[in-house]
Amino acid sequence: MFAVDLVRGRYHSSNGREARLLEHVKKVAEAGNPQAVLDAIDQYAHSQEFFMNVGDDKGKILLQEMDKLPAPPKAVLELGTYCGYSTILLAAHLKDPSAKVYTIDICEENVEIAKQMIAHAGLTERVVHVVKPLDQAVQELRAALKSQKADCFEVVFIDHEKSVYLSDLLLLVKEQLIKEGSVVVADNLKIPGAPEYVKWMKQQSDFSFEQHSVCMGPSALWLHDIIGAIGRSNCSPGCGCCCC
Ligand SMILES: C[S@@+](CC[C@H](N)C(=O)[O-])C[C@H]1O[C@@H](n2cnc3c(N)ncnc32)[C@H](O)[C@@H]1O
Ligand SMILES: [Mg+2]
Image (cartoon, rainbow, N blue to C red; front, side):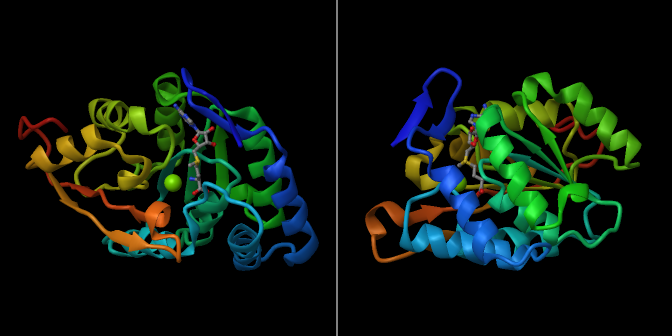
Protein backbone atom coordinates (compact mmCIF):
# COMPACT_ATOMS: atom_id res chain seq x y z
CA MET A 1 0.00 0.00 0.00
CA PHE A 2 1.30 3.42 -0.91
CA ALA A 3 0.78 6.51 1.16
CA VAL A 4 -0.07 8.94 -1.59
CA ASP A 5 -0.42 12.63 -0.97
CA LEU A 6 -2.73 13.42 -3.86
CA VAL A 7 -1.93 17.10 -3.80
CA ARG A 8 1.81 16.82 -4.03
CA GLY A 9 2.01 13.31 -5.44
CA ARG A 10 4.52 11.96 -2.94
CA TYR A 11 4.77 8.20 -3.01
CA HIS A 12 6.33 6.28 -0.17
CA SER A 13 4.94 3.01 1.06
CA SER A 14 3.47 2.94 4.53
CA ASN A 15 4.71 -0.61 5.09
CA GLY A 16 8.47 -0.10 4.79
CA ARG A 17 8.98 -1.93 1.52
CA GLU A 18 11.59 0.53 0.26
CA ALA A 19 13.70 -0.05 3.37
CA ARG A 20 13.35 -3.82 2.90
CA LEU A 21 14.50 -3.47 -0.70
CA LEU A 22 17.58 -1.53 0.41
CA GLU A 23 18.35 -4.11 3.08
CA HIS A 24 18.09 -6.89 0.48
CA VAL A 25 20.39 -5.06 -1.94
CA LYS A 26 23.02 -4.41 0.71
CA LYS A 27 22.90 -8.08 1.67
CA VAL A 28 23.15 -9.68 -1.78
CA ALA A 29 24.71 -7.18 -4.21
CA GLU A 30 28.45 -6.66 -4.48
CA ALA A 31 29.28 -3.10 -3.37
CA GLY A 32 30.53 -0.85 -6.17
CA ASN A 33 28.88 -2.97 -8.86
CA PRO A 34 25.92 -1.09 -10.41
CA GLN A 35 24.71 -4.07 -12.46
CA ALA A 36 24.72 -6.28 -9.35
CA VAL A 37 22.60 -3.66 -7.56
CA LEU A 38 20.12 -3.43 -10.46
CA ASP A 39 19.93 -7.24 -10.67
CA ALA A 40 19.27 -7.49 -6.94
CA ILE A 41 16.50 -4.89 -7.17
CA ASP A 42 14.91 -6.64 -10.17
CA GLN A 43 15.12 -10.03 -8.51
CA TYR A 44 13.46 -8.75 -5.32
CA ALA A 45 10.84 -6.76 -7.24
CA HIS A 46 9.96 -9.76 -9.44
CA SER A 47 9.70 -12.22 -6.59
CA GLN A 48 8.80 -10.36 -3.39
CA GLU A 49 7.05 -7.00 -3.55
CA PHE A 50 5.89 -4.49 -6.15
CA PHE A 51 7.97 -1.35 -6.78
CA MET A 52 7.61 1.57 -9.16
CA ASN A 53 11.08 1.06 -10.68
CA VAL A 54 11.28 1.37 -14.45
CA GLY A 55 12.70 -2.18 -14.50
CA ASP A 56 15.00 -4.04 -16.86
CA ASP A 57 12.87 -4.22 -20.03
CA LYS A 58 11.93 -0.56 -20.18
CA GLY A 59 15.35 0.34 -18.83
CA LYS A 60 16.92 -1.14 -21.99
CA ILE A 61 14.80 1.18 -24.14
CA LEU A 62 15.89 4.15 -22.08
CA LEU A 63 19.58 3.29 -22.56
CA GLN A 64 19.10 2.61 -26.28
CA GLU A 65 17.70 6.12 -26.69
CA MET A 66 20.67 7.54 -24.81
CA ASP A 67 23.00 5.66 -27.17
CA LYS A 68 21.36 7.25 -30.22
CA LEU A 69 22.64 10.71 -29.26
CA PRO A 70 25.44 11.94 -31.52
CA ALA A 71 27.77 12.35 -28.53
CA PRO A 72 27.70 10.96 -24.99
CA PRO A 73 25.57 13.23 -22.78
CA LYS A 74 27.14 15.51 -20.18
CA ALA A 75 23.93 16.24 -18.32
CA VAL A 76 20.98 13.91 -17.76
CA LEU A 77 17.85 14.97 -15.90
CA GLU A 78 15.53 12.56 -14.15
CA LEU A 79 12.14 13.51 -12.73
CA GLY A 80 11.27 10.92 -10.08
CA THR A 81 14.16 9.28 -8.19
CA TYR A 82 12.19 6.89 -5.99
CA CYS A 83 14.66 4.20 -4.76
CA GLY A 84 17.32 5.09 -7.32
CA TYR A 85 16.87 2.23 -9.79
CA SER A 86 16.69 4.36 -12.94
CA THR A 87 19.24 6.80 -11.50
CA ILE A 88 21.75 3.94 -11.19
CA LEU A 89 20.85 2.69 -14.67
CA LEU A 90 21.46 6.14 -16.19
CA ALA A 91 24.54 7.01 -14.13
CA ALA A 92 26.24 3.68 -14.85
CA HIS A 93 25.70 4.30 -18.56
CA LEU A 94 27.43 7.71 -18.65
CA LYS A 95 30.48 7.66 -20.92
CA ASP A 96 31.74 11.22 -20.46
CA PRO A 97 33.89 11.23 -17.28
CA SER A 98 32.47 14.58 -16.13
CA ALA A 99 28.82 13.75 -16.90
CA LYS A 100 26.21 13.66 -14.16
CA VAL A 101 22.63 12.63 -13.56
CA TYR A 102 20.52 15.29 -11.86
CA THR A 103 17.60 13.57 -10.20
CA ILE A 104 14.56 15.29 -8.76
CA ASP A 105 12.14 13.95 -6.17
CA ILE A 106 9.91 15.69 -3.65
CA CYS A 107 9.79 12.79 -1.18
CA GLU A 108 12.67 12.97 1.28
CA GLU A 109 12.11 9.41 2.52
CA ASN A 110 12.57 8.09 -1.01
CA VAL A 111 15.67 10.20 -1.60
CA GLU A 112 17.29 8.87 1.59
CA ILE A 113 16.77 5.30 0.36
CA ALA A 114 18.03 6.24 -3.13
CA LYS A 115 21.19 7.85 -1.77
CA GLN A 116 22.12 4.65 0.04
CA MET A 117 21.26 2.53 -3.00
CA ILE A 118 23.39 4.75 -5.26
CA ALA A 119 26.25 4.73 -2.73
CA HIS A 120 26.13 0.92 -2.67
CA ALA A 121 26.40 0.95 -6.45
CA GLY A 122 29.47 3.20 -6.14
CA LEU A 123 27.89 6.03 -8.13
CA THR A 124 27.52 8.82 -5.57
CA GLU A 125 29.94 11.09 -7.44
CA ARG A 126 27.89 10.77 -10.61
CA VAL A 127 24.55 11.82 -9.11
CA VAL A 128 23.16 15.14 -7.88
CA HIS A 129 19.91 14.99 -5.88
CA VAL A 130 17.44 17.85 -6.02
CA VAL A 131 14.68 17.52 -3.43
CA LYS A 132 12.10 20.00 -4.66
CA PRO A 133 9.64 20.24 -7.54
CA LEU A 134 11.02 21.24 -10.92
CA ASP A 135 9.51 24.73 -10.89
CA GLN A 136 11.55 25.53 -7.77
CA ALA A 137 14.72 23.96 -9.14
CA VAL A 138 15.14 25.85 -12.41
CA GLN A 139 17.87 28.26 -11.24
CA GLU A 140 19.77 25.46 -9.50
CA LEU A 141 19.66 23.33 -12.65
CA ARG A 142 20.73 26.22 -14.83
CA ALA A 143 23.72 26.86 -12.55
CA ALA A 144 24.58 23.16 -12.60
CA LEU A 145 24.59 23.11 -16.40
CA LYS A 146 26.82 26.17 -16.48
CA SER A 147 29.32 24.69 -14.04
CA GLN A 148 29.45 21.57 -16.19
CA LYS A 149 29.82 23.57 -19.40
CA ALA A 150 26.70 21.85 -20.74
CA ASP A 151 24.27 23.76 -22.93
CA CYS A 152 21.18 21.82 -21.87
CA PHE A 153 20.04 18.43 -20.62
CA GLU A 154 20.60 16.08 -23.53
CA VAL A 155 18.54 13.32 -21.91
CA VAL A 156 15.44 13.72 -19.74
CA PHE A 157 13.68 10.79 -18.11
CA ILE A 158 10.19 11.70 -16.93
CA ASP A 159 8.85 9.24 -14.38
CA HIS A 160 7.25 11.19 -11.53
CA GLU A 161 3.69 12.44 -10.99
CA LYS A 162 1.75 11.79 -14.21
CA SER A 163 -0.48 14.86 -13.85
CA VAL A 164 2.57 17.15 -14.10
CA TYR A 165 4.33 15.39 -17.00
CA LEU A 166 3.14 17.99 -19.50
CA SER A 167 3.53 21.09 -17.32
CA ASP A 168 7.06 20.04 -16.33
CA LEU A 169 7.98 19.31 -19.95
CA LEU A 170 6.67 22.72 -21.00
CA LEU A 171 8.71 24.31 -18.23
CA LEU A 172 11.87 22.58 -19.48
CA VAL A 173 11.13 23.87 -22.98
CA LYS A 174 10.34 27.41 -21.82
CA GLU A 175 13.43 27.64 -19.64
CA GLN A 176 15.56 26.17 -22.45
CA LEU A 177 16.78 23.39 -20.21
CA ILE A 178 16.19 21.13 -23.21
CA LYS A 179 17.08 22.14 -26.74
CA GLU A 180 17.29 20.79 -30.26
CA GLY A 181 18.56 17.22 -30.15
CA SER A 182 17.55 16.55 -26.53
CA VAL A 183 15.75 13.28 -26.05
CA VAL A 184 12.86 13.03 -23.60
CA VAL A 185 11.75 9.59 -22.46
CA ALA A 186 8.55 9.30 -20.45
CA ASP A 187 7.43 6.19 -18.59
CA ASN A 188 3.93 4.89 -17.77
CA LEU A 189 2.04 6.52 -20.60
CA LYS A 190 -0.53 3.77 -20.56
CA ILE A 191 -0.73 2.88 -16.89
CA PRO A 192 -1.51 5.05 -15.01
CA GLY A 193 -1.25 7.19 -18.16
CA ALA A 194 -0.53 10.79 -19.06
CA PRO A 195 -3.03 11.53 -21.86
CA GLU A 196 -2.44 15.29 -22.03
CA TYR A 197 1.27 14.73 -22.41
CA VAL A 198 0.76 12.21 -25.22
CA LYS A 199 -1.75 14.49 -26.97
CA TRP A 200 0.62 17.44 -26.80
CA MET A 201 3.61 15.44 -28.02
CA LYS A 202 1.62 14.13 -31.00
CA GLN A 203 0.67 17.66 -32.02
CA GLN A 204 4.22 19.04 -32.06
CA SER A 205 6.13 19.33 -35.28
CA ASP A 206 9.25 20.31 -33.36
CA PHE A 207 9.31 17.01 -31.50
CA SER A 208 9.45 13.67 -33.23
CA PHE A 209 7.51 11.24 -31.10
CA GLU A 210 7.42 7.48 -30.93
CA GLN A 211 5.84 5.07 -28.51
CA HIS A 212 7.20 1.73 -27.37
CA SER A 213 4.69 -0.71 -26.05
CA VAL A 214 6.25 -3.05 -23.55
CA CYS A 215 4.75 -6.16 -22.02
CA MET A 216 6.64 -6.86 -18.86
CA GLY A 217 5.32 -10.10 -17.49
CA PRO A 218 2.52 -12.55 -17.04
CA SER A 219 0.08 -10.04 -15.56
CA ALA A 220 -0.43 -8.15 -18.81
CA LEU A 221 -3.39 -6.26 -17.46
CA TRP A 222 -1.34 -3.97 -15.27
CA LEU A 223 2.16 -4.63 -16.48
CA HIS A 224 1.55 -3.78 -20.11
CA ASP A 225 2.92 -0.30 -20.38
CA ILE A 226 4.23 2.28 -22.74
CA ILE A 227 7.51 3.89 -21.96
CA GLY A 228 6.83 5.71 -25.18
CA ALA A 229 7.26 9.34 -25.66
CA ILE A 230 10.66 9.35 -27.13
CA GLY A 231 10.42 13.01 -27.93
CA ARG A 232 13.28 14.48 -29.90
CA SER A 233 13.43 18.20 -30.08
CA ASN A 234 13.89 19.14 -33.75
CA CYS A 235 13.81 22.89 -33.80
CA SER A 236 16.65 25.17 -34.74
CA PRO A 237 17.38 28.26 -32.64
CA GLY A 238 15.19 31.22 -33.52
CA CYS A 239 12.77 29.28 -35.69
CA GLY A 240 9.87 30.59 -33.60
CA CYS A 241 8.54 27.25 -32.42
CA CYS A 242 7.71 26.39 -28.82
CA CYS A 243 11.35 25.55 -28.02
CA CYS A 244 12.80 28.85 -29.10
C1 LIG B 1 7.56 6.04 -10.33
S1 LIG B 1 8.55 6.67 -9.05
C2 LIG B 1 10.10 6.90 -9.88
C3 LIG B 1 10.76 5.59 -10.24
C4 LIG B 1 12.19 5.75 -10.70
N1 LIG B 1 12.30 6.66 -11.83
C5 LIG B 1 12.74 4.41 -11.14
O1 LIG B 1 12.44 3.97 -12.25
O2 LIG B 1 13.46 3.79 -10.36
C6 LIG B 1 7.92 8.31 -8.89
C7 LIG B 1 8.66 9.21 -7.91
O3 LIG B 1 8.28 10.56 -8.23
C8 LIG B 1 8.22 11.30 -7.03
N2 LIG B 1 7.36 12.47 -7.30
C9 LIG B 1 6.02 12.57 -7.28
N3 LIG B 1 5.62 13.80 -7.64
C10 LIG B 1 6.75 14.49 -7.93
C11 LIG B 1 7.00 15.81 -8.39
N4 LIG B 1 6.01 16.68 -8.63
N5 LIG B 1 8.28 16.17 -8.60
C12 LIG B 1 9.29 15.31 -8.37
N6 LIG B 1 9.10 14.05 -7.93
C13 LIG B 1 7.86 13.65 -7.71
C14 LIG B 1 7.67 10.33 -6.01
O4 LIG B 1 8.02 10.74 -4.70
C15 LIG B 1 8.34 9.02 -6.44
O5 LIG B 1 9.52 8.79 -5.70
MG1 LIG C 1 7.61 4.54 -14.06
